[in-house]
Length: 382
Ligand SMILES: Cc1cc2nc3c(=O)[nH]c(=O)nc-3n(C[C@H](O)[C@H](O)[C@H](O)COP(=O)(O)OP(=O)(O)OC[C@H]3O[C@@H](n4cnc5c(N)ncnc54)[C@H](O)[C@@H]3O)c2cc1C
Image 1: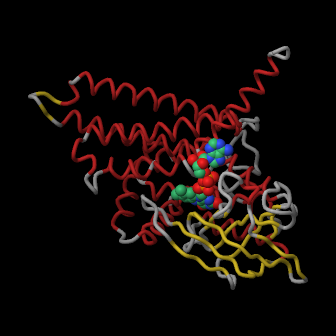
Image 2 (image 1 turned 120 degrees about the horizontal axis):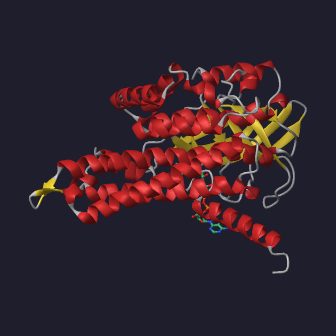
C-alpha cells in the first residue's frame, strides 16, 4: 500500500474503531480492520507464508516495513497500532522456534486476525531483569505443567494464545534455564484478571495453575527461551520508536492546526516567536527520531548487529514523544487537557512507550555499555 492510501485507510479505520463501545470491542474491530487490509502479513516471516521483502531474511519480518506501518497507524489510532503489532510480537517466538504444520496453521490464522496473539514475559518480580522469572514448567510423561503468573500482558483476556517465558531449570536470578512455550488461552488452569492503564490498551495478569502444555509447544530449544525472547524484542523494539514518531507527528500536526486557527492579542498564536521556537524544536526532534528509526531498521533488515542503533532510536523517540505531546497540550491551552481532544489522548497514550519493551533506563544502559566498549577498543592504552 502507498503511504497516502495507508494513511487514508488508517484515518477511516480509526473512525470505525472509535464508534465501538468498550476496550475489547475497539480492540477486536481494530484487529479485523488491519487484517482485512492485509497488513498482518507483515507481522509473520515469509518462511511461514508472510509477506516477503527483498533483502530481508525469509525467516524474519522486515523491521523497515513494521516501522513504516506503525508510524502511519499510530498517527491515526493507538488501538490500530497496538492490535497490529501485538500479532507479530506474540507470534514471533512461534515463528522462530515452532516446528510442524500446526505452526503454519496458527500463523495463517494470526495473519487473518482469527487468532489473537500475546507475548508473556513480565512477572510481579521480573520486569527489566528477566533472569528473575519464576513461572516454572515441570516436565512429566505428557509434556509440561506450567505454574506461576505473568502481569502487564497486552491482549490478556482477548488473546487466543500466549507465548510464555518459563523456568525449566535453575533458580530465579539465573539467566540459564528459561524456556519459551506456546500456550492456548483455553487450557485448563489458566486464569486472566484484567486491569486498566492510563490509555486504552487491553492488558491484564495471567495465572497458571498446573496448566498442561503439550511437548510440541516447547518453542526452540530447552533452555533457549531467553534467547528467543530477546531475539523477538530485538526485532520489534525499533517499531516502538516508529510508533512514538507517529504519535509525535500527530501531536505536531494538531498543534500547528490550532496555532494557525487560534487568535489571541489580535493575532494568530502561530505568529508569536515563543511558540514558533517550540514548533521548530518539535520538528527537529521528530526529524532526528525518524532518521534514528531508519538507521536502526535498515541495519537490522541487513542482518547487522544493531543494539546501539536500536537503543538510540527507542530511547530518543519515546522520550521525545512525551515531550512533543506535552508541548502540544500546552499549545492548546485549556482545550489541551479536555477529555476527547486528540492531544489529551496522545499525551496519555505515549507514556507507556518509555516503559515497555525495555525502559528508557535499560536503553541507556545498553548505549553506555556499547559506547564504553567502543572507546576501550579504540583506546587500548586508556
Ligand atoms: C502498557 C504496557 C504494556 C505491556 N505489555 C507487555 C506485554 O505484552 N508482555 C510483557 O511481558 N510485558 C509487558 N509490559 C511490561 C513491561 O515490559 C515492563 O513494565 C517493563 O519491562 C519494566 O518492568 P517493570 O514494570 O517491572 O519495572 P522495573 O524493572 O521494576 O523498573 C522500575 C524502574 O526502575 C528502572 N530500572 C530498573 N533496573 C534498572 C537499572 N539497572 N538501572 C537503572 N534503572 C533501572 C526502570 O527503568 C524503571 O524506570 C507492558 C507494560 C506496559 C506499561
